[in-house]
Amino acid sequence: MKPATKFIHAGVHPDPSTGAIMTPIYQTSTFVQEGPGKHKGYEYARTQNPTRTQLQDALAAAENGKYGISFGSGLAATDTLLKLFKPGDEIICTNDLYGGTYRLMKKIWEPFGLKFHFIDMSNADNITAALTPATKMIWLETPTNPLMRIIDISACAEIAGNANAMLAVDNTFASPFLQNPLDLGADVVMHSATKYIGGHSDVVHGCLITNNKEVADQLYFLQNACGAVPGPQDCFLLLRGLKTLHVRMQRHCENGEKIAHFLRQHPKVAKVHWCGFQDHPNHHIAKTQMKDFGGMMSFELKDDTVTAANKVLSSTHIFACAESLGGVESLIGHPASMTHASIPREERIANGLTDSLIRLSVGIEDAEDLIGDLNQALG
Ligand SMILES: *Cc1c(COP(=O)(O)O)cnc(C)c1O
Figure (cartoon, rainbow, N blue to C red):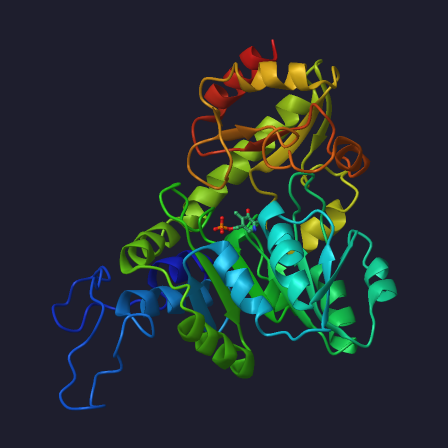
């Protein structure tokens, strides 16, 4: 099946008791058994819920995977994956990780004995240098946030395979429409489905997808044993969001391209970070591993000050100043004072996050309206 058909049909089937074409919200905590242990595959809703089962199957299919495991948030998914490891195990990560993932690793898991190395993976050779006999996983995000760096998933999969380590990819920014890491050799894909998969800024959700039965069995065990499960209403919203993912992504990409080019020629803009530009340092990799370049980008102002950035952020009318991304509506954010405010200024600037850096999640509104909004805000 091609993506468009798969996002709408894969994993879901009409409700067996009524024929309802849309998966019902099974708002129940338990299931009546004919006799002790004699049931229809459902016992207790932390363990299994029919709405969640269909979502998990649909998400797995969306990533060309066999097994999908859903959680109450993206971070709950990542937290569960980290529970596969033991004190002394080492994990190599991209250095410009999603802030919440970094916090989870440093503040929660490092004190329990997992060891994390944060490195620049835009050159995959850097990973080889960080490998040790204790390396158990490579964790990466691509494109990265907010500088839109691109990491070569196939190259990382080869390094991980040779080192007997697992490769996990946070595919939130690309979405399953633009990039499928399992096809490129990754072992596990993680999504904050809160973003593009949900697509309407109305639900928080996370998932893990894999083709490895052994890993999947461990993750299903942890999902039930630790209990960070999503509610059925949230699963319903995700199933609904997934059905239009391809249509939304096509528009995100079209609008993203137009806005990236508009910003690049604007006299007040110093630099635009968007992986669709031919002179983006890893454009050639983006072109091979992604279907298109998406609606995420960031840009710097010639007047590289927080004041200048704040002026732009407080002057937009359509772009809403908010954290998060991937919804139908356009969002604008200022990493230095919002998502990355906890990083000391010098460290932040050394990592390329300048004072005036502004991040956009380009929505699916009319492109001319969006450009007009940015134009007046920059003016
Ligand atoms: C939002 C986000 C997360 C965390 O997901 P939640 O659903 O907010 O818990 C992880 N990774 C990336 C890239 C994200 O954007």
